[in-house]
Image (cartoon, rainbow, N blue to C red; front, side):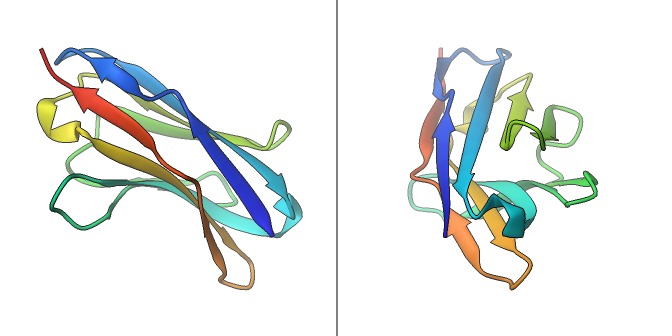
Length: 116
């Protein structure tokens, strides 16, 4: 079992920045890749960014150049630095971890609201 806890969401004005963090606990040795997903009201959950066990990142086109995903293996955390935020970035952001056995785990989500 893997437990994931997100933090760092909140309200920010357009053009502002936020940093999300995800703390992993439990069977962390089994985690392969991790990622951030988001779900806006009335929309499906979508991938925002992914980072492999080798620390290679992948980003959705909508966030490339604005968001940066990182992983601290010593602290068992993953972060998402979000810059130049837009109203369309408003969503609940979820941390995801996938184990070597392809089992997925989700955090409880953290709300990000971009509004003036």
